Length: 150
Image (cartoon, rainbow, N blue to C red; front, side):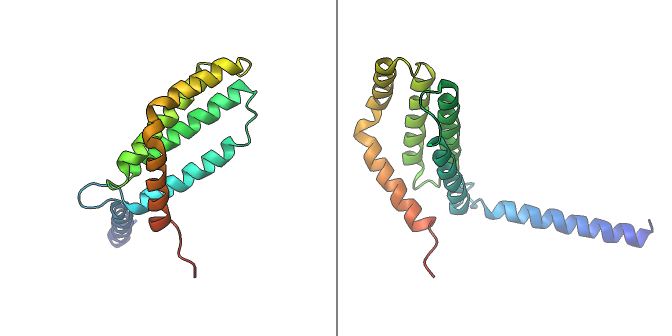
């Protein structure tokens, strides 16, 4: 490779790195806060994971536990990507989902009373706040993540 070809290759590589870095930086605000776009992408992925969970047979403990764990992890990812305006509500919902996942993981589907009791107990600390948090998240997603008709 000639010196000119090597320089051209280095310039192209530098340009690719600069573009990639620029794209990554557009996902973050100057304050280090996650961007609305990043949150919306994580939330969209959460909806896909949640939809997949609906196809699981609740009597199949392994599949149910895996689905709940996957949903809890994706909620945590979406909460981590949430801009400050919505982060407390997303963290609350992620904590609720993690608690529900743990309740399912610690009980068997054949023990319906025990599982129901564990799920109710896991949800109890969130009862007063989950509806309002859910509504704020839905409102935020509607305002910021939903494409305008057009």
